[in-house]
Image 1 (cartoon, rainbow, N blue to C red):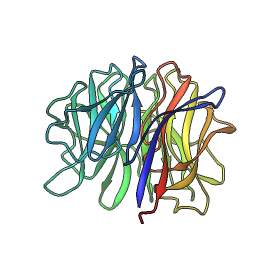
Image 2 (cartoon, rainbow, N blue to C red; image 1 turned 180 degrees about the vertical axis):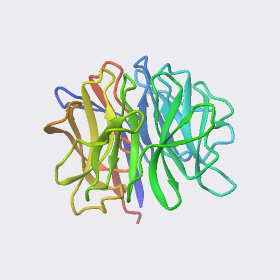
Image 3 (cartoon, rainbow, N blue to C red; image 1 turned 60 degrees about the horizontal axis):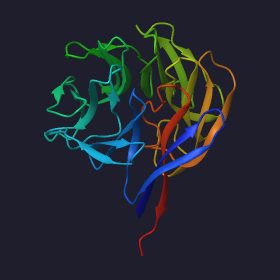
Image 4 (spheres, rainbow, N blue to C red; image 1 turned 180 degrees about the horizontal axis):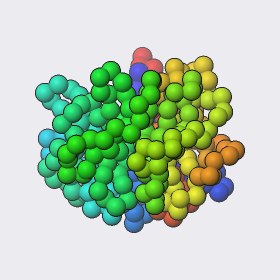
Length: 283
């Protein structure tokens, strides 16, 4: 099976899609840089910087970390990038930080597996999903390492934690009520509140830089196990107000895993970057 990946952007007001580049291999999870000029994505275990104006592609030097997955996040000042890398010793995901221009990664989470999703606006903490004692919950940890703090404690999967631009809340997705739904809590883990209630499995809530909108990925009920977000499914990117309420579908596409695992809002909150896919059976 051959995968065709297409890096796209979409206007959140008009729904107009623009294909930037197609690849005959797998790419995933674009981050939009704060200057609006580049997209950072992962492919084949490495990180790449894509210039939107010229379509030029540059690999980011990530040192020994060449088994990166699609959980990478840029610091709010865009001087550093945090990654989830599967370490050679045991193959488990751990979180590291390196300079934005590239360099040797510094370990943040010695415990594994840990899957990065959020960086606090003040630059002090990372938020991530981690399996500890057979249960997947949401944790935070200082960017320089230290003691991790558990924020959720519920059966099933809690995943995708991401800070609001003001740092006051963490958005996440949880399967605790049956289907995967979008939730919000205070940054200290208090007041965990369900926000979506539709008959879909909703993943990876991403807050727009202006704090007004939430984009998330939806799988059809019955297409997937509520606790799974596989590739190569018919999915939707949906938008709703950050205050909750009704959603509208922005994009229908063939995708899933890799489409919008990380925050891919443009800095002006007017566009989203994502990856769509095609599958070709090898002869």
